[in-house]
Image (tube, rainbow, N blue to C red):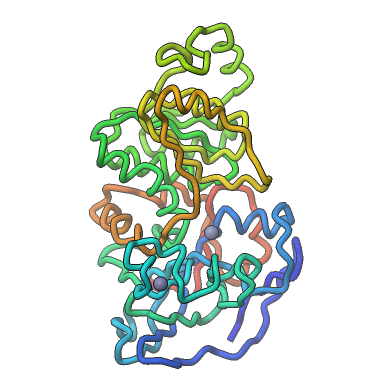
Length: 360
Ligand SMILES: [Zn+2]
Ligand SMILES: [Zn+2]
């Protein structure tokens, strides 16, 4: 079968590799039909995140079951979402919905990301994928959902979703601020999910004009970030002092850092209301990152970071897409066939989707 293999920054090869086969009753073999480019994929492909090749590429897939064991819970022909993280559904962390830390696999086990775990599990930009514990892993694509629209549901969509969904449930009608940037589609999905889940105001800040135009499709408030200007404005404000409960920039109950810039993160924390919750979905590739702990202490801010538990959040994400309540497809910037994936991988735009012989 064909497998898109990352060799080194800017260099991919379609390689012929042996097709996977069932090994256990709970295994499935699936054929990816719509595969999205994860935000991280762009940086690997461009050499910004220095992952050593070669390894099978792509990890956000909607697929069709082509073979399944008797206990796999799916049958040939069904369409499914394949969570990017491998998990068993049986161990203690899995049973507690912490599918990112499944004990059956090496830490950070994922498709298409061999360097994160040291183990090759195959990639989504392949003719076939091998799925162990398919009875737990695979989530059926609800009827009526377009595989292209939800191609990123394996990773980036739930990553944005988890930054707002539970907090909006606990605080119905809360206000939400998202600063976009590095995790470019994840921030947009967070903003779109917040609007879909009844936030009373969603403000999306980003210096990138394309992502701002994308965010507007969710019917939310969108402004340039202009960080220097905003920081200057609040400098002389007494609300800027670490222990102040009031004053300073506009306050939001729920805030999301998809920017990956420590100065923007500081501004975001200053914009988080007393008792608010701030989630960073960006990855800081530095041993430490400055955060204003005194201000967070004074306002009682909860700070969350870490990888998404994609499998655990997937069903709720797909449920919200059914009936058009949430439109992740607003973020899709370009749809291209598998055959052009290697050339298109470093395209600008927040979300590429690659299709493989897809008949909708
Ligand atoms: Zn990813
Ligand atoms: Zn597990």
